[in-house]
Structure formats: C-alpha cells, structure tokens
Length: 268
Ligand SMILES: NC(=O)c1ccc[n+]([C@@H]2O[C@H](COP(=O)([O-])OP(=O)(O)OC[C@H]3O[C@@H](n4cnc5c(N)ncnc54)[C@H](OP(=O)(O)O)[C@@H]3O)[C@@H](O)[C@H]2O)c1
Image: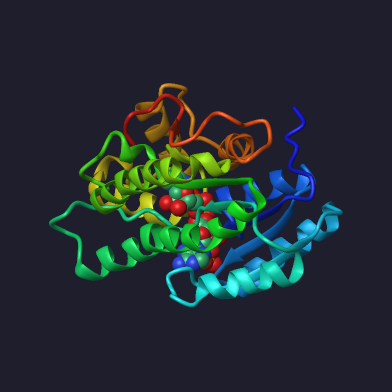
C-alpha cells in the first residue's frame, strides 16, 4: 500500500527506541521527513546515524525532555527551520508505571502525568495551527489497552491511558473539519526496553513463581497467559498501524482508540 506521505514532515517523540524507533523507520521507508525526539543524546544520535545510512529522506533529531515546558518550542523551532511545518505528530514518549494506587507516590503521579498527558496536550496545541494552515494533519497518541480495560496493578498508567483516549476523541471532534485526524493506539504487551525496565522487575517482585527464570522466558509465560495470540507484540506491529492512521490512505478514521494487543484485555 502506498501511504502517500512522501515528503510529509513527521515529528515522533520517544523515537530513540522501541515503538517510536519503529514508527520513525516506517515513516522514513515511506519517504517522510522525520524529526526524532528523546532525552538521551547518545541513543538518539545512534538512531539518527543508522537511519542516515539506510534512508535518503531528511532526518533530524532533537534531545529534549518533553516534560519541560520549553521543549515544544524547541522541537517546533528546529522542525520549522529544517523541514517546514509539521504535518504528522506521534506523541509516543513515555513508559509504564507498575503498581497500584496505594503504593504510588506523588512524584510517580506528577512525572507520569507530565510525560504522558501534559506533553501530549502541549504538543497538539502547538502543532495544530500549522496543520490547519496546510489543511492536512494526522496525529496519533500512544495509550495502552488499560485505557479500555484498566488493571489495578498499573493504576497510574491506566488512569492516564483513559485520559489520553478522551483527549484524542475530544480533540478529533474539534479539528475534524480541518482535515486533521486524531487517533489513539491502545498498546498491549510489546517487547521493548520499557517492558524490561518497568514491568519485568514488578512482575518478579509480585509473582514469586517467576524467580530464577530469564526475562525472555518470563515474558513468554506472561504473554501465553494474558495474550490470546500467545506472544508479545513487536514494535513494528504498532508502527504499521500508526503509519496507516497517519497516512493519506486514512481519510475516515478519527477520534478512535484502536487497541493493538493480540486480543488481550489485560497486561498480566
Ligand atoms: N511496550 C509496551 O508494552 C507498551 C504498552 C502500553 C503502552 N506503551 C507506551 O508506548 C510508548 C513507547 O514505549 P516503548 O515500549 O517503545 O518504550 P521504550 O522502548 O522505553 O521507548 C521510550 C522512548 O521514549 C523516550 N522518552 C521517555 N521519556 C521521555 C521524555 N520525558 N522526553 C522525551 N522522550 C522520552 C525514550 O528515550 P529517553 O529515555 O532517552 O528519553 C525512548 O525513546 C510509551 O508511551 C509507553 O507508555 C508501551
């Protein structure tokens, strides 16, 4: 399928690894110009170098923390200077916060809200005027299946996922007549560093029967138990769906949360 996004300008947050990296790669493979955003400069530079080797399209990166209030302006300034106005936005930066309400701290709540929700609101608000001027825009906000099927073991992540779903829905209705389509992907268990760093340690702590088995085996067993397709997702599974939603082929899907979870209605 020709996605029709050649030369479109795409900003992808959280693009140095996992799902964001795969989305950037998919956009580049379809000829889009891509702005990679993440905090750690070294990993971002490695991603940019690899993409430069493999693709002819324009690629730039900007090392910012999207929770910083001035990050949006810095991303926009560099995008406008190099490629022109943003036409595609993927708000993907973030991570999971395992644990229930009672074990969570004020800091956990503040940090997660800042990265998952506040940064999305700011990025959408700042980029939409450029999309309105163009008369074309596509936005995907990364959420989780917990936005539809909340799990108390991921209290903060799943409360925020529901908020992301509604942010996207409300925004989609506000800008639908401007040919700007806004959707959310409810991500299930996808094998990335996020899983390794934030989910696996929690599962080990709360499920003693997993002691002594490798991370690989643990993920395989959790997936077999909770995911009807019996395996975790790959970043590319989310990237191909994102690419379609952000493409010229999508003219009718907006305001929706599309769950990509191997049929699962829970994480663990
Ligand atoms: N993997 C899953 O099973 C799963 C399930 C549900 C939802 N999700 C969501 O999918 C998204 C991508 O997750 P992933 O699994 O691909 O994780 P990942 O491999 O850990 O990638 C996260 C990316 O976000 C960047 N990032 C994190 N905090 C940031 C910040 N404050 N400012 C700028 N960049 C930031 C990271 O780079 P730096 O650390 O260098 O900034 C990295 O590039 C996240 O929003 C996550 O909540 C994932």
